[in-house]
Length: 319
Image (tube, rainbow, N blue to C red; front, side, top):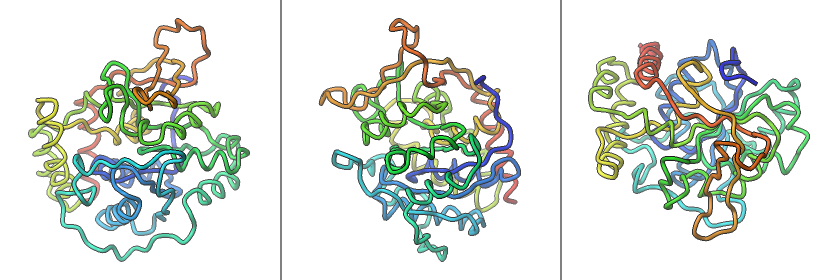
């Protein structure tokens, strides 16, 4: 597989909204000419499941895309207790906008069953999974029915860190640390994996100038995006001393739409699942010193101005 071999895609988005998940959903919903969204599945992560599934439905309603089905998935990690991030995202997960009870209802089917059923009904190597949160739903789908692997084209995920170290623990990125056992299962699944780690997402900061450009678009989606990003930026701006926050999850969708914005390298990636000190650490054999076959493309660079140009162009489509 070569970087850039991505055209029109059937995708399943797995998320835990989260302001950055919300922006990723807006970007995907604005790009349905190129992305055939089979459904949106939600998982416990940034906030508990009851909030992530509600938030996904709110985002669909704001975007006027009530026809996209939303499914609730796993309420906790596979083997360890759930850790959430209200300190980053606020008590609702998408603080910054007015929260309402969406008219759009959650689907009756469990997210894991939806993923399995959708893949079993698909052709070989035809559906891309786009997980933006802890990998619990994806791992449980593979465990429950390993035959679905045949029909997964690739997994484009946000998670992990190498040069940027951790953002939940000293050595682990949030999504990997919340459910390291699920992450290990996914990275060992044998399908192509494209990784949007902190190494690349920390290069797409939501500066005030960029937020203002988004706000000036003026439509409801753009204003909601700007309002969420203003809230989202306060934590990381204080933590890292930079102008704005990293816009993590939209990198997955941006790569599907415009892969030439990114640079990456094939590496072997393994997940630490035993050590209390480094649980969830992504061990990236960047230089191939262990001689292990690569199982992922580790993204490391991005054209950040091109990324925001793409985002702004797509948000204008909601006008």
